[in-house]
Length: 291
Image (cartoon, rainbow, N blue to C red):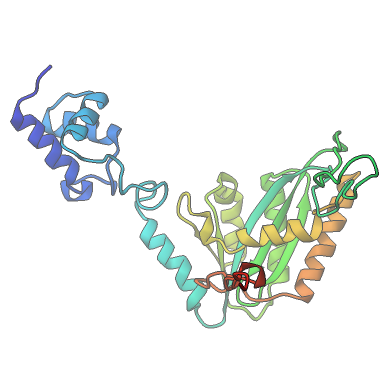
């Protein structure tokens, strides 16, 4: 089927326009959104494949500037991100910002570590590649680690539960309320959009403790929660290279790792990039041989 040049021009002009300038609620186009808009507003019925062919013929690259996060998936991304970064960089006086999240499920198993297996060479064969011994078998049910961190000083509070249920979440919030000093007038809790975090019982908790305010991060923006990079630290301190026989051993390892971290804590600063090691200069082996 051949379309009139006026119709093709209308499609191209619509695709190059911003959806919000045309009265839509989203920030960027997708093929489904564009097909729906053309049929609903412009009265143009065209398949997705045909629209892609028109773009290729016109030299346009579809989804070239589109990303997997941001305003495409959350129209209020800029506002939510600004609210969270402001709490990190310029928190209100007599307030504390606490990052909440859960990690898991964590299995009762063996975790890979740095211990090498058979690294030495034998008389009959050369040294092979070092690897870790295979360890099969499940030794109990998995569980979850609930965590809370204050980025200003890096202090962390953790609790372990066998299930990620609403009753455990409310119990964890109660412990965090007791963990935060009483002289703090306002508590800003940064957390994701899990359904459990928005339950009615959480509203009742907020009514019981009015100094709390829950700040939900945008969709698909877990990097805005500063406790996310700390989970890697906890795995290294508590699990790496260890074998667990029961969930009680996992709980003990998490408690000891949390205590060790709090004894050597450091602040988590928003916007501070990781410092990479300077590039090493070529050694003597790279120098040309003297004639």
